[in-house]
Image (cartoon, rainbow, N blue to C red; front, side):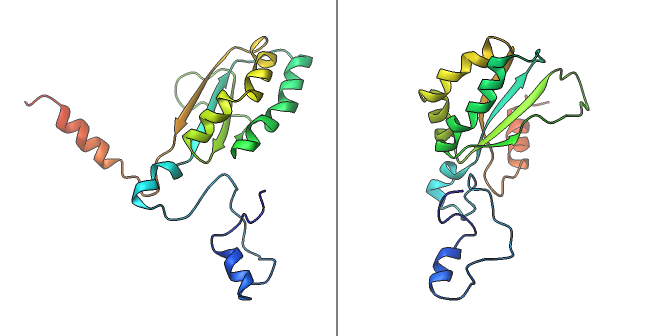
Length: 160
């Protein structure tokens, strides 16, 4: 965790002597910024995700090396595993294989990781042995209301 991470305002309050150096409250993950975003930087604060749907593969030394090295490629960009090496339940359709989700502080950080020299250097270790699909996607901002999306969809429908 980066220095100064934790609850918003905790560092300032400690200096003022209002909070003890340790707190019993849980710390939030470093990849999330829970400040209330200003209107103009709301998009910059939306969490983004790298999501991989990977097919099952036989164990291989190169896959093990990839797994050992991947964290070092995304941590400098504020990334962290949210889902990795866990079982999933298929509730609808088919979903063979595995899912991996890495969270980033924003889409620009996710793209910077993907385009960095570090990740493409190790990607072939996985790609030679595991087929799959990988996407980068932005999350929605705090307070997202899906009814505005439904309204826009209804407005686009042809008139009866």
